[in-house]
Each structure stands twice: as C-alpha cells, then as structure tokens.
Length: 187
Image 1: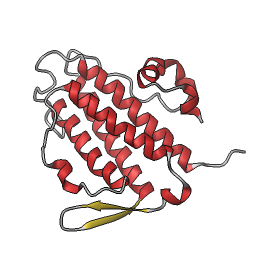
Image 2: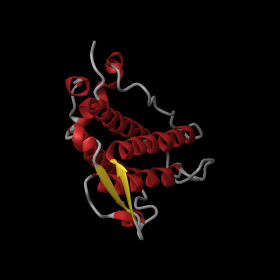
Image 3: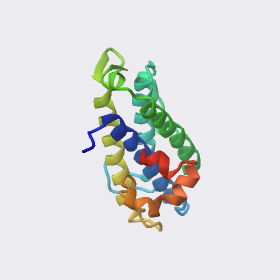
C-alpha cells in the first residue's frame, strides 16, 4: 500500500493553484468592457478588487516562504493592476514561484520556520501551515470571483477538476499553455 507523501500533496496543490488561476483569469479576460471593475456583491465589491487582493496576499506570503522581507510593502498599492492582462501575467509569475517552492520541498524544509514580516513584529509559522493558508486563501477568493462571473457575460469556468488522473481530459489546453505535462502532474 502506498504511503502518504505530504511533499507530493503540496506540489499537486501548487499545480492545482496555478491551473485554477490560469483558467479563471482566461475567463476574466473575456469580460466585456466595464465588467471587470463593475460593482458586485461579494467580500470585495468587484472582480478587479478581488483578483488584486489575491495577488498582493500572494506576494506577501510567497516572499516570506522564499525567506524574503517584503512584508507589508506587498500591500502598498491596494490595486496594482487596472487590467486583467497585466494582472494575469503577474499572477502567473507568482504562481510559478509557488510551484518552484513546492517542487524544491524536502521533509525538513516543510516543517521549517517561515518568518513573515508584519510591520512591528515577525510572525513565525511552520512552512506547511503557511502553504495550507495560502492555498485556502486562493481557493476562497477564487470562489468569490467565480460567483461574481455569474452576473457577467462570461460563464464561470470549471475550477475543481485538476488534481486527479481521471480529469486529464479536461486540462490539456491549460497544460499546453503552461508548458506542463501530465507526467509532471502525476509524479
């Protein structure tokens, strides 16, 4: 019987995260003029604000996971992107950083301490906990954008079919766009 491999699990979550963002942002790129920034009912009152929140939080946590000291500078500009194209490019870059971090994990690194610079203090957390928080944060806010798309000209895309082998038939286009392979996802 195979044993549980937390490193494989975090790696697959990183791939899933990047794939879901890729698919969601492609859908958002098809929005009609004005729909990206239009007021909507959600925690953040627009698709634009929600997607900008996702990326600034990613910058904060990914920098900490990489051992950086960016801290709250990640939030200096509330909405760093006014258009979906530049936001999608920046999100793809930070998603690739997450993938690289997870591909380089070792058992020791996974339980190492991450120092998050929070202005007047340093928050210390285990790396696995920070990754779990980051993936949950992404999923939570992607779900909000997904729901907001229901009130636009673009149908919300399928976002929950990435990790298992049986769903390979649905992700070929995204994998090609990311220059990934099924073998990479299934190892």
